[in-house]
Length: 497
Image (cartoon, rainbow, N blue to C red; front, side, top):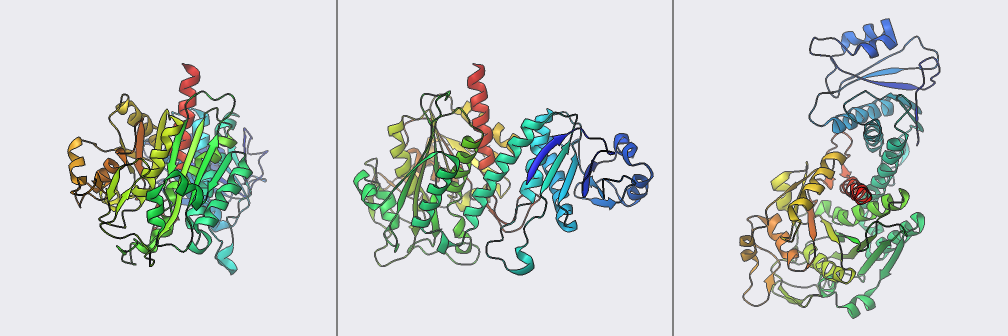
């Protein structure tokens, strides 16, 4: 899809569909600017239109180049105007899909927001709502989203924001596609190859380790989880290190890469649990999407990505309950649940990250069902270790979540929670019981970091059973926009210092 910005008059504009966000004022009247554009045609259409969010009505104006106009209801006075713009643009994408149009123009509302930010939000909402995963569809259902050209109507500004929105949205597409892939096309070997191809496509470095190098490095948590598999594990190292990077020490992004999780010998029930486990590598997908953003936006930031890759199956040699694993860090872990495998592979990756002396490490993982119980699918819990700048780290990521729409919320990391992980036979055990499961999962990982670190448990928003505005059913690509916004803000702050 091409995206452009212009200040066209209606007389000069040619498109199959013009989207006009419209809402009633407190006095019951519509935006006079919108009404003035369309005159009597608008007044006739507005008889059946209340302006509520999600509502729309189509009419045919007396303007030669504009074939149809859709009035889109929205809430310009909402608490988060960026999100309101994304949602109204998503409604517009639904209208465009229903009408099977190819060219769409959007009248970008004038709001209390920088025009670039407004344009970015509109592009993201429209493109993300237009995502289709049709790889396994046939016939009419294989028809992709048909819009080829999107034009944003502004005062002429907003080009940079629109382009940034397009690039980030396409990176979210990449993450969604990876999550939605069938497990038989996403084995550890195939997933490693997909990461290599992404690196070649966007010009960042990728190194894939096989079993021999993993064993030599001592990534024994990853090796333990892999014992029931019929295929060897892999370990991906991604690097983006531009010459003008604003940071000498890299930001390390760690993504859980469990390509399918049966639970191992602690077998999951199928319905409502195992049937979503092709998404257990959504953290890895978010890291891959973030690297795509960094490379395409040419961000001057040094990044390292670490992705431990395996499936978790109940094979004849699978690791078992009460196994004790000596991890990469040297710490020993008593396994009391083989379905708590994600923290084992992440712990090895976080321990390995020490060699890069990270300025900050951020891990993303579909780690616990407890995170879903706590925050649902609306937001992801975030936690950090008690090193200098802890509050500031969480606040920056929370602000990035608010701006990007990938919302996150901090949870406590009191030392008291670590008691649940105490083991009688090892340094710690891999589960802490039913209570505060999202927090004890983070407390487990905390044992393997010695640098500033943030954990994001994306189990809730990474995969949806039902679509929600611009978030589709299936993989959502959660985390890509969050990391992109966080990195953009990091660069901006460094350049202004």
